[in-house]
Length: 428
Image (tube, rainbow, N blue to C red; front, side, top):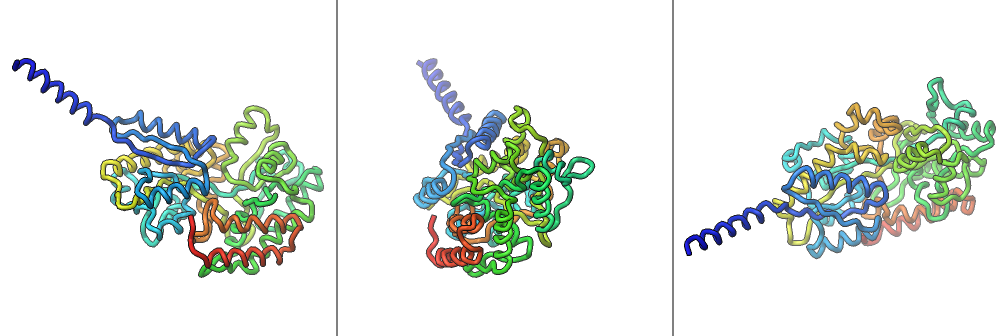
């Protein structure tokens, strides 16, 4: 009988040991699809195999408004996950509503992270009123792709085959004209069809480069710099330097098939260019440069992915799961070369400063200058990725570029609707 009791006790002890050894589950919602999704899965799998204390389980949701609406709703009822992917451009709209849990300096230090590890402008975007609400993963700015074959024929390359400096709107316009005159192809491929967002990104970049402001006290104050920026894009179209009316996939296809010497787009198209060159579908040599310095500064529109912790209503994240979130985030930072292959510039400086990253082409050709000069959407609940302010601009800016509205009329209509939007109540 005693022997049987000892066996029962031993079995109970073994069961308790096995239970205590079970990893803590960390729930992670994100909006990462395509190549980004594959790279994040690789990082998650790598982390889960690297240790047995935590197990990250991801759920991938639809990018944009559906993702943020679901997270906001889930957070308000206390059912959000432990960690989410998050666009830093939305911090200013979420932090005031108490939807995100601040992350302290001490918590970051517990996993070997500190402010000095990150690009300053990207770190600034992850903060609101002195508190850190996300750990930056990357920045993905607007950059300039160029076809070296067409640019070379137009006399735009230096002796090393790199693009000669472009230091003004006049320089850029002259480059487009040279391509058209000497090759018969267009200067620029740039998404400008109905309801497209790329014009907003260039518009914001140019205003920032002039030292202007877009919003003040929830009103549009872009003024003359805003008109000049939209007029520049309109003139490029009117003079035949820009291909007309492409949606996003068409604008990329126009560049990759050699119909334009330049493409203004985000760094997220770098993997397609690298793969296309390897497979032979991109038949020309190319380069990628930071957005040119059109005015006094070289600011360029950007957003950033980061990791944020939802502030679940009346359900603070338990310490054990918080430790797991921080441990996972630190692992991703320290292995962000995997993420860098997607074209995004890692926010983590030790990665960007490494010899391995410097050998990564074309990424290292644009990374440092671009990341030091990123310009995010203006602060406000209406701003940020897939935000309503961008959607308003997409109604009117492309119409001006296409010649359907005058620049003054497009700006006036945009200002009227944007001001009305910003004076209203915040929404998801």
